[in-house]
Image (cartoon, rainbow, N blue to C red; front, side):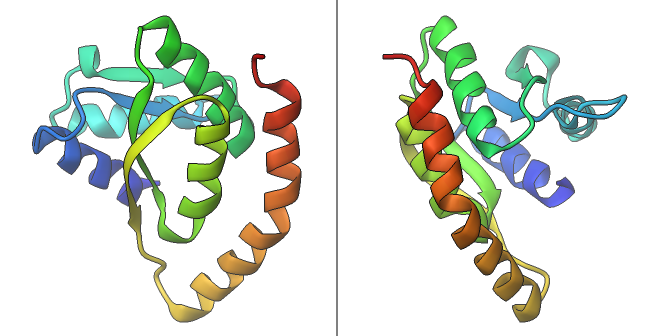
Length: 138
């Protein structure tokens, strides 16, 4: 998570992304809150942070994040995630109605980790697509 936030912050400071959508719920402190604290520590102002704290998986990240952004009149994003996760994330955020203008991913720490994540992503893809297609706005 730290490496993904650091990459998003670099893109923010480079002027590529005027806002950071931080998505993820759970725990006593949501993943979005933890990412928000990291981004703030890296110099991103609170006004540039949009937190989506309800989601429990990537499909919900896409659906709830898209809803928040549409309410703000936004529909184009630069997607940041783990490199192995980008294919599925791009597909789900696109199905949720957002236009992905670019995507950037942090690499795996090892080839073995990348291989394990690739198997996970392949297995998760059909269920994630079904979740988004079933719940997306018509």
